[in-house]
Length: 348
Image (cartoon, rainbow, N blue to C red; front, side, top):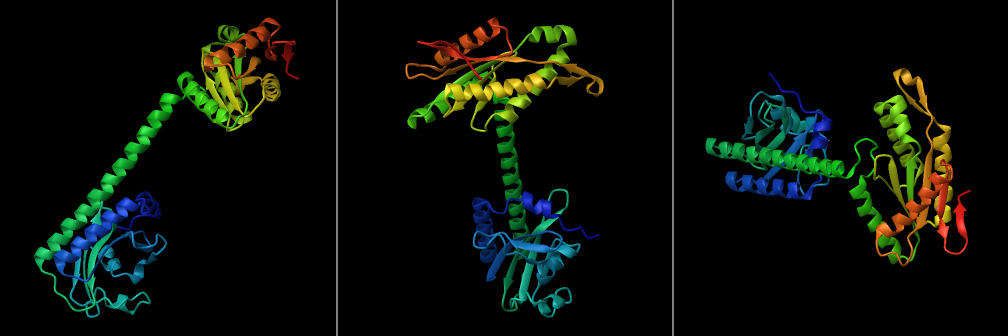
């Protein structure tokens, strides 16, 4: 029974643009030439309609129609090998020589590239422009090299999976699971990086502390599931309303911190005030079919990172002090830190 050719998605997953992998394929192809005495060797991968040469010397776009390739006869058959002394006289390949893609190949020997579950990915083949016989030992060596190609494919796939898994684990270690924002440690790290960047360019960095008003009351009245829904929604609004250059983190139960690069305190306060207004205007839907509507407000404190601040905590303490004043003066408001000479400033 003929195994169908793999899908285009499978070819994409092979990452044929990776230079290191292509160089390794070329090395195995050269080994095939040396072991068989043939003039040329190719590692190629196929989907249902096309054949790609997997070589560092070939352009990624240099695929050809599968029906114009001698490998198509091997891929369409039930055997793991196709060996032909002269493809012009071989009934399995005679028709292919009349295709526009004919390149003067006479002798051909190919080995299938199969996955462990039997899917056909392509071929490792050797060719020559003269009639040539390939003995049993040479065909077995060709099969062994084909297995090495597949071992390399599996190794590269495992490496990609490991790299992706590590990236996912790293992201999870830096992300607050409930809101999708940075967690406390990751936010401190990225805020520090932003500060160093801003310093080199003599720009401004402003820090913001936000706190949900009466969050305990929400948990007590509606349950912790409702409280989680509120936190998720606030996190979503923070991500959607702030710039991609801003760094937002959940640094406590209902506390959020924001680092805003190249932004003055007053500009930051105006932006956070608009965010505060949007949060207050959108009760959070919760419960069966969103039937429960929970009113939510936030208070905020804003402080610039001053030249005399030696640590992130120094600026955060001033933003926290402004937040405390916002809470003490009635909540649901954003205040800038008290200026040294003119007292409190409230964002417009």
